[in-house]
Amino acid sequence: MSDPMSDVLRSVRLSGGVFLDVQLTEPFCLISELTAADCRPLLDDPVQLVFYHVVLKGRATMILPGEHPVEVGAGEVAILPHNDTHTVASAPGLSPTIARSLVQPAADGGLARIVYGGGGAETHMFCGFLGSTERRNPVLAMLPRLVTLDLRSAAAREWIESSVRFAAGELAEGRLASSGVMSRLSEVLLVEAVRQFAAGAGPEGPGWLRGLADPQIGRALAAIHREPAAGWTAETLAGIAGLSRSAFADRFVALVGKPPIRYITHWRLHLARQRLRERHSGIARIAHEVGYESEEAFSRAFKRETGVSPARWREGTGG
Image 1 (cartoon, rainbow, N blue to C red):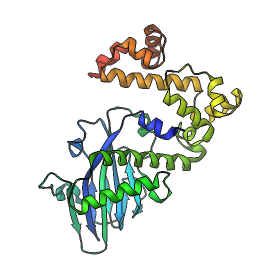
Image 2 (image 1 turned 135 degrees about the horizontal axis):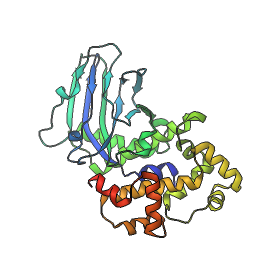
Image 3 (image 1 turned 30 degrees about the horizontal axis):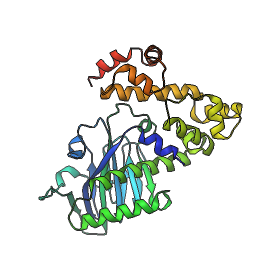
Image 4 (image 1 turned 30 degrees about the vertical axis):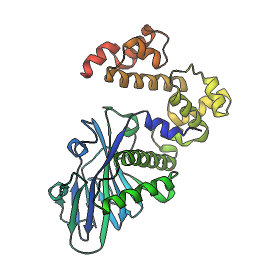
């Protein structure tokens, strides 16, 4: 059975990899930031970036301006969904050094490294990224500035742990781990972090993340994301969720924040914007792919949502 969280995240077309091996000794304090240049040659010109640190050994404190410091230890991941500049330190209050000034490029084209600190207890981590070409990614927009993931409680724990061990072994040998494995690991880490965040968000959690964490509404959302062009009705979705139509509608609105048919329209138009930006298909074909019977019906719905026609919107994106 499909996992709704994975389906939703896969639909926003994130890709990534690992770019930096960081070996620190206490005391240490680094100002860390990620740029598009750090992601090459694995990813060209991403519009949005997600930065993450996997702690292999020791511990570090993540500090963002205006937020409480968060400590992460071995077996944990710190994910920054909005790529905020942040501080990685052995403790709060230390004088920072700019991490970029310490990067040692690999002579053989392998993984760049940072080796830094005062000679005390060791912390070893690798840093990775996910990039998106979506200017306003609906998944990332709902997440806080910092999300942490405990790998011990991840649903995909066994696969993640084997991939992390593989990466750590490659780092120890001075090699760059397979970009395919690292890209997949990056994706899975984000899925698991969002899953844990959604499960702990409670009734005040953001938007449809609450729906994804709900077993019944999550099944309906998974179906919508698997087949966005299907002729969905509230009745068919209620059947998938195992609820009566009225109970399904009430629960969907309570969790997701909008009626199911309105959500379907919103998601179809989101997918349409992706396809329009890619410029691989004509507007009539895109209309059919996202579930509209005619180009005219699609254009009307698109203009209601965005204020402009699909053709005008495509021209305005420059892509």
